[in-house]
Structures are given as structure tokens and as C-alpha cells.
Length: 305
Image 1: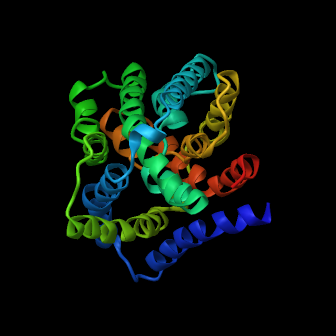
Image 2: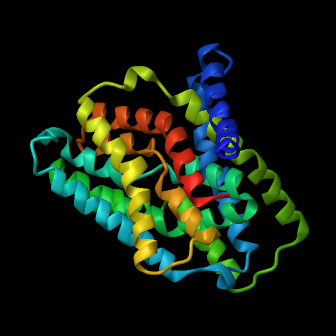
């Protein structure tokens, strides 16, 4: 357990350092906005493309795990929808609540934790999952908000999926790997250098963007969505792995970690665009990010390093 703690602790120390730098004025809102654009449009796509394109995908890709990942999202979405039919979830918060139960911060949190826990292999597995989980959760996010808020927007789904730089980079990487495309050394070295700054910069930005004042709104909704996202979702993945007799190998472990990611910061953008509950969404993002240090330790201790 102590070993697990010291694996997870540096990740959150960098996050808290990012918040400290923001509080002291060392980095400001303009820097955070620019850095996030750089990460999302350049650094993360470069990292994902580099890791996937230079790997032998055929030898490690497990289609059963992709189906389990999809099934996990569907089950959590269905359970969230069922809970909205009770008095626990106010009508105005239902769409946002459902979205926050399954749409995680796979890029900014899932990738770093997978890398620092399981090394380059973990980062590769996480990158492969990114290619399939992002379109899946985007589809269900639009559906969740559309059912309870504004009608689902097809254009919003395509914008967040087909024109998403992360999805494009993952698909391009898969194509390059399958076709055994060979790149000149200077290209791979350039991608390696860009990739090296991605994860630390992403953690800085997460910390700098955290605002405790956002922990407002319906506390019960925030707690329930946090419980779904941090505990129930990865637990369902483990149950499905057991039901389908899947060995808990390195790729299965990374899948559980990816499912245990805190709520995505971009959930707030989608909630704003489709008339969702901003208070509960922002509150869930902050709560799950802070509480994920405990859930990561719990699941990493169970899975083993």
C-alpha cells in the first residue's frame, strides 16, 4: 500500500503545485488557457500518435477489453438514467448528473496515472483505449444532456468526436501501426520531445484550474455522481472482466484505471452548451479530481503494480 501511495502522490503533488503557482500569480488565466489549447491540439495528439504508431498494435490489442469498456459505459449510463427517475436527482440536474457518472478526464488524468503506474506499456495501452473511449462517451454525453436539457446536437457530437484532435491522432496512429509505416528518425525524435512535456504540463493545468469555490450546488448530486465515477464505474469493469474470464493483465489493469478517472473538465463546456446544470457539473469535476487520489490508491492496490 505504501508503494502505491508513493506512486500516486507525485502526480497529485504536481497538480497541487500547479494550484500553488496559480495562487501566487506565477501563472495566470491567460497562460492556463493557452497551455490547455497547446496540450489539447498539439502535445496530446503528438503523444498519442507517437505511442500508437510506433507499437505493434496487432500483438497487444484485445478486442474483448474494448467490448468490456463499451459495456461499462452503457451499464453506468443505464444506472445513472435509472437513478434520475427517483427524487434524489432534481429535474434540472439530471442530464448533467448522468454525463458526469461516465465521462472521465481520460487524457489529463488517465494517461499520466497509467504511465506513472505501469510505465511506457501502461501509457501505450491507455492511448489505445483513448481511440475508442472518447467517441463512446461523447455520444452518450450528448444523449444524456439531450434527454433532459436541450435536444441532442448532431453537430456537437461530430465536433467533439470526428474533429477531436485526440481522436484524429489515435486513428492516425492506429493506421500507421497497422500499415507498418516507418518514420525518419528526426520525426520520431521530434514526437518524443513533444510527448515528454505533455503529461507534466497537463497536470499543472489541472491544478491551476481547480477552484474550491466551484464546490457548490446540490451536494447529494455531487456525491452520487462522484461515487458513480470514481468507485462504481471501475468496479463494474472489474466485474465484467471476471464474468468474461479475462485475465487481469497489464492492459486490463489500465482499463480499470482509465474507467476510474475523475469527471472531465470539458463536461462543463458541454453542460453550458446544452443547458445542463453548471453548478453540479463544476462541483463534480472538483470533487472527483480531489478524491481520485484515494480511489486510485484503492484500485491500484487491488490490481497490483
